[in-house]
Structures are given as structure tokens and as C-alpha cells.
Length: 103
Image 1: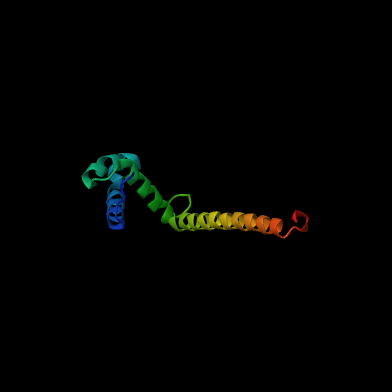
Image 2: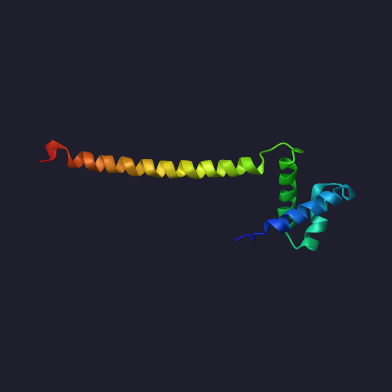
């Protein structure tokens, strides 16, 4: 199970990398150097930085808000499909019970 970092830790780590980004040739190099000092995984830190850049319109991609909305809509869609299957099963059950040919 992956570790969950508090939002404050994430925000501070991203801010530190963004402040020092000019000192390194790439985002990966900055994350690789700073991750052990921050006690976070280098790939986690790299993804946080990339997402922060997308959220700040510095890079192309879907923002955190868009991802949250998509996640919510997918869960809602899954729930609605499940409810629809239950209603279909119930209608089949009651249709059989009310069928006059079964008597």
C-alpha cells in the first residue's frame, strides 16, 4: 500500500523543488536530489511537481479539479449502472410473478 503524505508536506516539497528548479538540468534531477532530504519518493515528488505545473497552466494536461470531477462522475456512473441493473432484475422478477400464463 502506498504511503499517503499530508497536503502540507506535498505543498512544501513542491514549493522547494520549484524554487530550486533552475539549479538542476531537469525536473527529474531536482526531484532525485531533493526527495531524500524531504523523505519522500522521487517519483512521487516528480509527479506532484508536474501536476502543480499543470494546475498553474505552465504545462498541458488535466488539472486536479478536472481529475477530481472525472473521478466523481465515474463513481456516480458506476452507482447508476448498478442501480439500473438492480431495477432490471426487479422488473424481470415482478413480470414473472404477474404473468398469467404461469398459473
